[in-house]
Length: 428
View (cartoon, rainbow, N blue to C red):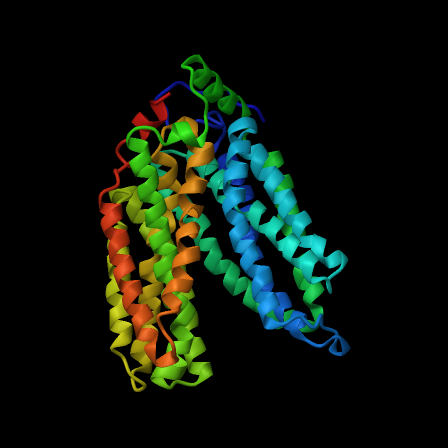
């Protein structure tokens, strides 16, 4: 499905002559891969109980520390993966890269099942999976941006982002249905569907290979190569630093709150595990709504308007800290509202694709988003170390509030793109 490169200034760069139905089929194919990319992060939920069980009970006899190390190395792997697959996408196109990435996710997720009792194989495999997961955002989001006009991009990027919430719900239901005894079957639910998604992307998503070749040829004529060093020249260095700081603020602030919310409710407020878990789970519903609402707002009023949600998140975490054991209903409402607030990142896939010249789309979105993980990787343990006991979790929440506000300030100084999409696409 090769497509001619359209004239400069036109918004749709891929599949210009495709009907909306065909374009939506391409989007659905990308959705399949993106959903099971999100779902792959739940693999730990499926297999951790088996990992720590004794061998006599059918487990692997891993320690809790070993299981944490296995899945921590996966998160670290997303960073080099983002860079590696960004470079690959700049050479062979985003569609081809997404097909490769989806296939590798399936393969590397299957790899530890060949010897599931091997700790070293699990660590190696999950690092590789993390690296391949790092290639999804930077390939999928720019493809959507090039398939649709700017007025749709925020909503469509938000739909992709909100799939993480749906994957959590889906994962919980599947885990509850199959249980620990069927951990290997649960693993296959993370392997087979994304392999099918790779085939769907190959068949139904228009190729951007010719467009990628054109970008490289145009860059070569001007004595420039499409790489990270050239992307960050001039004003784009400050934009690049800004979006990584913004993503880092998001990962850090939300993780600092979310990772400690149930502990706070149990130990500081004194609620039961069932009530605390119920309150926490409502954030997922709020996020699902928030991602899509903020995505709609970003298309209608501008990509920077959702920074209101970042400020709102800070206010709501403060309100959360003022509630007591007799405020169960209020806790539930505030939990939903926090989830809604943190949906501010729903349109970032579109925003990060538009902030840089179109020729850099294959590398700009992924590093702008996943680059924030470098900040959170160091910041979250440092923040957690400030609370020596459960009663001091409020210190972590206070820092989360401050980081949300700092992120909103950084966002306020970044450029608006919604009225400049045509200009950005016409650039080189």
